Length: 243
Image 1 (cartoon, helix red, strand yellow):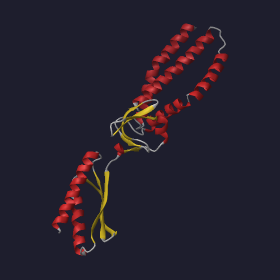
Image 2 (tube, one colour):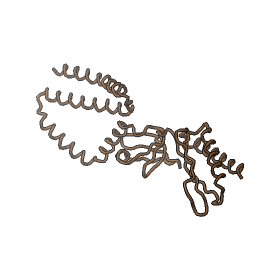
Image 3 (tube, rainbow, N blue to C red):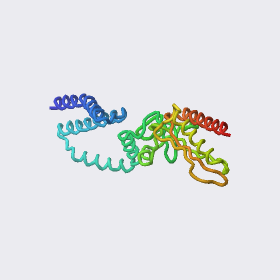
Image 4 (cartoon, rainbow, N blue to C red):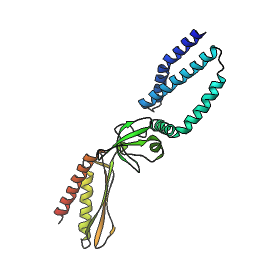
């Protein structure tokens, strides 16, 4: 009987890899491509559960009363869980992050306390490399409970600013200026054409206010700055040509 129990659980232990593979395929089929760490965690937890069940069955097979052992483990588990509640919260937080796919390694993220690039997602914490090259370990319990901005998920980047031109600028000059800036933005290859706003929005202190609002196609910060600079130089050129 002992040999049969060992063979049975050895079969299930070996089959746990196939079960994990089916679990991964199921999530992938639903369009929820799972994190490799989540699949690895599922596989390890499954094997641990099988090992505990096998141990209990073998102990019971040799005639020992396992009710006291189960009760003792229950009390011990309660004490451990109370002592390690922060570790448990971080573990659950890491599972939440992986299930929700809040971010992945290489993403540029920002929270209320930290901003940088994700280097590693562990069971206890997430390692974030800030733009000052410092490495910060943030508990996963915090990452799962705080708002996280994932800048890497942007499809485009916004540019918005207000130009202040002299109050005595003739209306016909303003119309030409707005028209030329709109034409330049609409013909720019690196800009998203879904929303381009160039309008006179009001009056400031001895100036007229013109809002320029558009989006770049790129999400790369460096390329975004290069495109913005190119647009700004073209706007200055228009100002110069219009006197």
